[in-house]
Length: 235
Ligand code: ADP
Ligand code: MG
Image 1 (cartoon, rainbow, N blue to C red):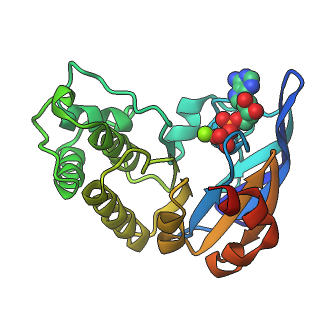
Image 2: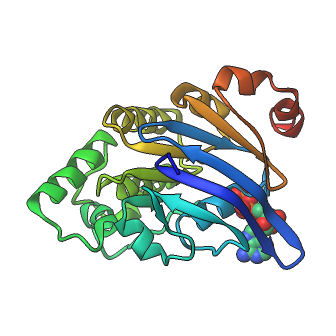
Image 3: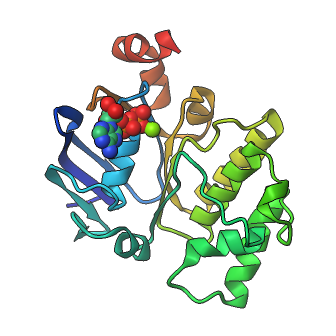
């Protein structure tokens, strides 16, 4: 199957709740794709299934031509597929550089990797030797993004990275996304901030009640009647 990521008819049920209902799509290497949809649409569940945290009830996930369905998260991560969580998990006993390097677990913390951690932190105006207690909620989210990017993943999936960010922090996040896009990193961006999605993504997927209802370029998605009804109109 062609495509860096192939999600093939994935269904996930939690008891009586169908969080994902026959979802299929592909991501090509180098794409920046947005994933939007109302609360409870299944966005985080989809990231969980792709990253190995949530086993699908039905369906397969292929990454880089390998069937990774049912693989544990660390094995998936080692293939170069990274994610952030909606809640930023922070290690208070570690400084910011170390908090970022945690994202490269499994690789040794080489001088090159340390340099990359410092570069990403500095681009986010974060001091590598500072400790997380000094950060705002928005800066903690940026720290989580830095952690997902430090090991140069082939695909990174960001779960609402802009939630709670100030205008200035949002701008720093936008610049970082742009840099990684230019480097060829494939990005799946879950966001309620639709303007961030439309500014950075060449394609947008829309989930509603576990179903993928639209997959197209931003201009098409913004005008889609189902999207307006399911999401934009209620925003
Ligand atoms: P989104 O990220 O789009 O807001 P989620 O993927 O978090 O949506 O949730 C999709 C649906 O699955 C919701 O109805 C949610 O309540 C349900 N759900 C998610 N995780 C679980 C779980 N671990 N157990 C039971 N229901 C869950
Ligand atoms: Mg979510």
